Length: 267
Image 1 (cartoon, one colour):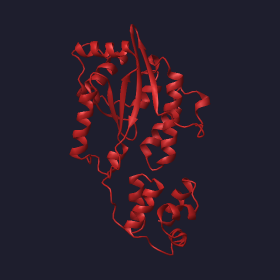
Image 2 (image 1 turned 180 degrees about the horizontal axis):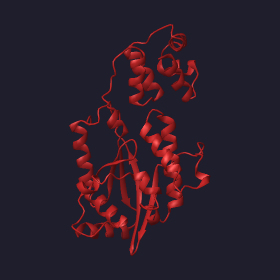
Image 3 (image 1 turned 90 degrees about the vertical axis):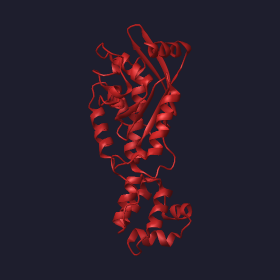
Image 4 (image 1 turned 45 degrees about the horizontal axis):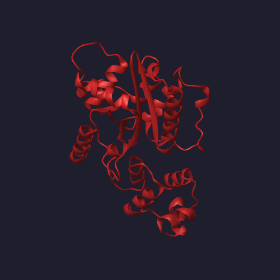
């Protein structure tokens, strides 16, 4: 626990006094915790973890290191029914425009029908029955990998230079924020080996804030689609899997895209 606390405090750029003031505890107590002279209660670990913005999986590690039981569920099927119902509502209300749900390593875990239709059209999936949301969600797609893979969606991203740079920098920041997420770290290594990654993108400019939204320009044959994409997460998830879920809403950026989505959904 002492080493983990000091590591996260240093990672956040805080002094012991800064952390003490933010958590409303004494600087002396923080010092004792970091030197191992005092053992924190579970409540203190949770308080300091929340103050430092530590990912829930790493808060569990801090609790175990302090001799306590983990507080947050980390099982793969741990998404509560209430959260699953909320996602279903979001999917339905966003039709016919795409909505994509990804996990902490950008694996696609759910899509709505609008996303299934657009992804199928852009990737040129073999002709046949209209693709269902369930089918596309079961393809094992990774949204980040598709963005950079020359055999994936990258050739059809008309503004790849802008989107690719921002996506890569976002993932680099996320790896720094959650170093215990081994799947995300492995994904970043894989992306950096992609031939489409510019040498200039390999070092994230941490002085430049992440864009809150990106314009995605998809172009294939006669299909031209422009979306404003936003990423949202659940507030105070209290669950490791829920914390890592990200919901991408693709909003039509122009009337032509809105019309094209409606037409694709009508087939």
